[in-house]
Length: 296
Image (cartoon, one colour):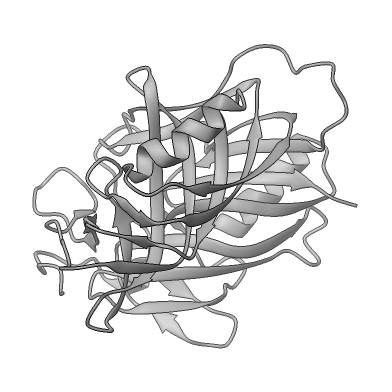
């Protein structure tokens, strides 16, 4: 499963020229009081519907999730790919549809809305029937849950994650929108939903988001996006333009002393890597959807 190599940006540049005007605001973020919900994705439903039903029943319209275990049949997915046109900085591969049942290892999901309807964005790792381990962007309507999948969700009431056309990248992307003034209920922890724009160092952006909201420390919940390759703390390197990423764990310290984030990534060649990433050396490719929960 190798994406078509149409053009490759010199890795040394570590920056992608996007087709539209560079937005002055390099991240968007809003805060609310978070709620946590644990449930199972039920077989026979699309992954989009299996996630939307319990969240909407709990009156949660914006959330980030971790999912693990269970299976899909069929599974349909895309991998990151180099651009096949003269417009986009990166693109998607053709659709892959492995035969038989595919067992989920781990993934993250952003839950919000597109065109007024519930919509998810999911990156994950799984094991196919022939033993092949793959990763990528799961298609929300075409992929059907075949065995129950465990889900942990963190959501808010007063922020919408809306999937809309983005002028800078030419993609349709999730971004947060304030639904109303932050609610007066202080029973939940402070939670931030954010979107980071292209070419921003992801760890630096997390710290800037916390500084904006006067949060000293935060745990990264869920969260998915793309990076221009990767530079890991153990010295390993992914030299690529487009990747699909989800966060395994993360802790943000706005004093910049102890910020850490561990990711899982698949590149355009289908290689899967994971580990702690370096500060200042991991710029966003197209977008990164982030959820931060304040901690002490």
